[in-house]
Amino acid sequence: MTSIGIHDLEVATAHHVLDLGLLAESKGIDPAKYRVGLGQDEMSMPAPDEDIVTMGASAAWEILRRHGTDGIRTLLFATESGLDQSKAAGVWVHELLGLPSQVRVVEVKQACYSATAAIQAAMGIVSRFPEERVLIIASDVARYELDSPGEPTQGAGAVAMLIGADPAILEIEPPSGIHTADVDDFWRPNDSSTAVVDGALSVRAYLDAMTGSWDDLAGRGGPAIGDIDRVVYHQPFTKMARKAQQRLDRHAGGSLGTLGLDSGSVYNRRLGNTYTASLYSSLASLLDHEEEDLTGKRLGLFSYGSGCVSELITGIVRPGYADADRSARVRAALDTRVPLDVPSYRSLHALEHSSVNDLETSHVTRAPFRFSGVRGRARQYERTDGAARLP
Ligand code: COA
Image (cartoon, rainbow, N blue to C red; front, side):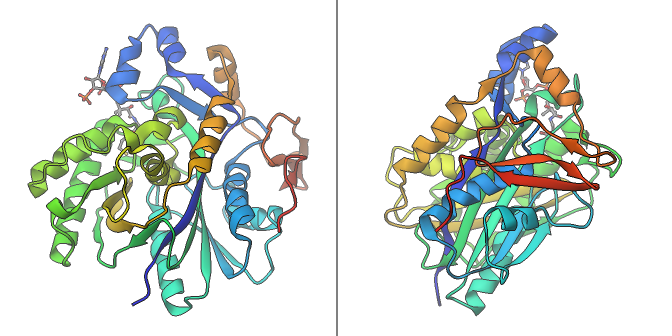
């Protein structure tokens, strides 16, 4: 059987950053609550001319720069920050990247889980047509109400992945563990730009979904816990991964302890929650920061989307997976974000573009693509000087 999995992945983020120490001080909260209690140091925030399309296109652009577009006939865009009720955000990305018209584009949604559904769909396509590759983009802006408990767990970022046969990074194994249950832990009604959340319930639902996924994986002939070397998790805040690994060890009789938790959360601590991109940012973080050579090691990937659907997949790390250039690029993207003070953060948070009137945004982002405004109720995007022509 053909081996299929993640051939490449790339992380992109937004123009601004807010230090959570500043946010804590502004509220008279001990900064250790955020840094230690939640495990978050910073959160990314988009400039007014950035959104899920510009971040997603930036991440995908790097992938296409390295691999070209040959064999790509599908682009799956995973997000829960949708910009339109009908049009898939990936169609704008398709245009910005100059992809051929023979590429189907779809948006997939189920809270933070949907990039994993996209991977499963991509694996189905590649097993039928092994010469094809599928471009997946997970891109989100996590927004909660100002002064709510969720506020310090906001963030913004995108991960682009190329799924194909004989993958260079991670071969995904066939069995996976699934758990779905109707839970009102977190959702965003159509008339709200911020999420509605019962935080405590969402933590419980996440942990229950993880044990449910484990049980399903075990029942379908998945590996024993002792044969899994590291697990990366969806990280709404990085402390959640610690809670999850503790629960997994207890439930499955494992001894993972804190293995992989620090290396798998370096990016997440600084990006904040990136919803659909969070698990795969954690995967990139682990690959880029784990000191032990991961070649041949089995990873677990736990994907959770409130509401809720979860899936635990496993994969074997391929020789030559390490990419020093990616880690340098992600670090540079994080280090060069423009810091916000709390008043500027609050006014940026309040900014919402309506589609009713035409609008031209001012040019702030340094990314290769920008949201230039609204014309005739339709969103407009453009390449900037930073976008070299693709091969
Ligand atoms: N120093 C160190 N740790 C501190 C602290 C301090 N001064 N003050 C509090 N803490 C710890 C708490 O003990 C707690 O740790 P624990 O979870 O290990 O017990 C942690 O910080 C969070 O404190 P808590 O009082 O529970 O925070 P909160 O009620 O303000 O909200 C969430 C926490 C996660 C519920 C909230 O951020 C939220 O709603 N987030 C969005 C939803 C979400 O991300 N859900 C996750 C599943 S998808």
